[in-house]
Each structure stands twice: as structure tokens, then as C-alpha cells.
Amino acid sequence: MRAALLRLRRGTGLPVAFGGLLEGQRQLRIGELSGTATRALCGLAVSAGSGLGGKAAALSRPCAVTDYSESRHISHEYDAAVEAEGLRSVLAVPVVVRRQVRGVLYGALRAAQPLGDRTLSAAVAAARDVEQALVVRDEARSLLAAAREPVAGPGAWEQVREAHGALRALAPRIVDPELRAELLSVTGRLESASTLRERDGERPVSLAPREMDVLTCVATGVTNAVAASRLGLRPETVKGYLRSAMRKLGAHTRLEAVVAARRAGLLP
Image 1: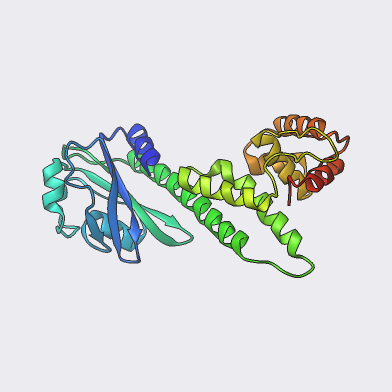
Image 2: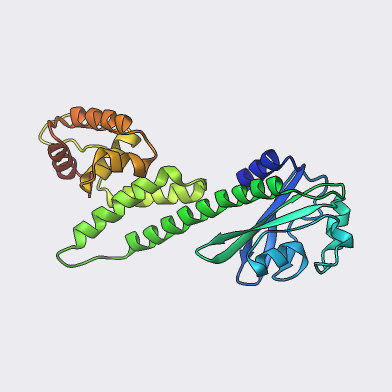
């Protein structure tokens, strides 16, 4: 949210931006401020259909007013907070994930003047950032929940390996540090060790995090190009990490590397 508000200000030229996520189905709470002069808006609870943001959430589309306190197109439950911050022209863009409103981003001026289409388009682009972050967060939480569930049956290990690979690939895309740490903690538990264990008198070998990410993708049978897409890397970079991991594992092929890593307890 904080990064999206900064992008909104840069993209629109609006000096003030704020926003928040929905709590439950009917209420939005302003949790992030950028460029504000007071704390009047912080923590403000906005009900669906009320004020400009509530209207945007209810209609699931962007809304804007040229002069907030004088507008006849919105209700005025939050005029005191808006006036305390000195805002006049305001836009509100809903954050929509899978057809469900999850939050609202606002941009504002302290002067009454129309906000054009380019300004609105830039604000919508910032809201897309939040939407993508929420999709990734939802996916991570879903995978975490699945990884914690006990599995049984002939396909149990394949399920574990698939969950492990998906979590490792998702980790670099997680912005929330606490969620990323939790995700990596679970992948660590799915692995029997974070480094190659000493075995038959051999010296243990450590793999770099990105080498682990690439090897985990390779273990699911994907190509370098697919692994690169999942990890946000170039195919040549994936090839380099894989080659390095193979060298450390003493493997000559991709399959040998995966087998060696599993035997050592590096991969589930």
C-alpha cells in the first residue's frame, strides 16, 4: 500500500495520497498516508456507499469530485477529516481482486480543480499494484495452509514437492517481510535441511538461496524458461544458477542434481 501511494503521487502529480483495505465486507479503514500534513485521516473508518471512497467501493469503479465539501454527488459523513487536511479535489480508486473490492486508494489536491483522465489512469495503475500484491499474498497464504496439512497416500510426497516448489518460487515476490519470513520458514520445514548434510565422510556443501530456488523449480520438471518466468529471472540467469548448483552437488545432469539433493535432504 505504501509503495502504491508513492507511485500514485509520482504518476498523478497529486501532493496527497492515502488508502486502506476493507475490514470485513462493509468497512474500509484508512491505514496509510502519504504527503498529508495532519493525522486527521489516519484510522478513519469508511462505510460502503458513504463519502467518495465508500461510493467507489460500492460501485466498484473510480470516482472523483472537484470540490469535496461542496459536491452533491457524495454523502458528507467525513467532511470534518477532509477539511482538517485541507483537501478539495479528490479521487478514489477501488482495489478489486477477483471481482471483490479489497481496498481504496485516494489522491487529492488542496485546490478545487478538475482531475483529468491522465490523472485518473495513473491512479488506476497504482491500484493495480496493490491488486497484484494481494493476489500474491492470497496465493502464499493458501499454499502455506496446504503445506501445513498432513498428507497421506501414494501421491503424498509429490504433493509436498509441488507445494515446496510453489512456495520457493513465490517467496521473492512477497513484499510483506513477515509473510515472506513465514513462507521461507515453512519451506525450511518441508526440507529436511537447509544445507547438504555431511554424508559418508563428504564435506557438506551450501547452496545459495537462488540456487535453491532454481533447483526447486527444476525438480518439478519445468524448463529453464518456465523457471525463469516463475522466479522473475532471465533464462540465462537460471541456467547459471543451475550450473553452479550442479557443480556444488557433483552432478552432471539436471536429474542427477535433483536426485543428489533429495538424497542429501535438501529437497523434499
